[in-house]
Length: 350
Ligand code: KG4
Ligand code: ZN
Image (cartoon, rainbow, N blue to C red; front, side):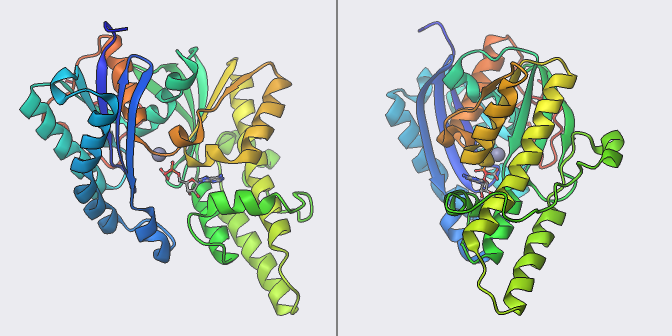
């Protein structure tokens, strides 16, 4: 085990400041500071607030991770950092810090893709990922289906949301139901007391006419509007809004589309492994429905535990460790914070 690379990962692309440390596929530390409470009253992440919070949290989070792993920066073989995609100002804090640490400790640096890191984190829980695999990444900022042929080289995008991200839809619907932010966990809980079949909400981009152009794309803004109209009609009629039924029916619409398209992506590409990541992967209904539908096709579903699904430093360290083990060259020290980083690059080239 000592021979495996010791890699430190820094994540600051959105509202979580994460520093993780792994050796090979073994997680040694996963320190996290979240600014989510500071965004709650705005109903969504405020970029400037997130950047400032990263700046304040980074050094203490780094120290906590090193203490937790029982190592010093000198012991580390490489430093990985999220280069993109994400909020420009937020990314910049992590990238600048990683460069500082890499320079001071004379360590190689890997600027990595945040989405690829969401895929790589699963190796910490379930071991090496069989390739090819299909990955579905669903969070507040992204909803994509990816074909993972080789996680060291590049990932092929199959589809993505054409409007809101899946988590964003949860957040917006929770807001209109007066349930607070972030919306996913509270809708997940509220939905348990509701009937998912009680209201027929629309399933975006699933009509036969969408097959040609948008087979693996998602759309959630029509669903969000449908929920808003339904609730308004109830209120106008002076009737109480059945929050649990609305939550359950909305959640069912999202999970139905996500899992149907993910399984279709696996079957049509002859892939036997589906990895789900991102904050929405914590959704209890999504997990059950994915397992149920995958089983019918002999597909194995891999979902890391909830703490690893949401943004964290361990995912960045996991991808860094994978790249080091594969002999991929480190990035240059002038690597950018690239808010629109493409999935075709898993790491910034050297
Ligand atoms: O990956 P993440 O922590 O951050 C990014 O957005 O990158 O994901 C956060 C998102 C939020 O939109 C939150 O509402 C959603 O994940 N989420 C959930 C659940 N837990 C978190 N959505 C549905 N069900 C959940 N249990
Ligand atoms: Zn993310």
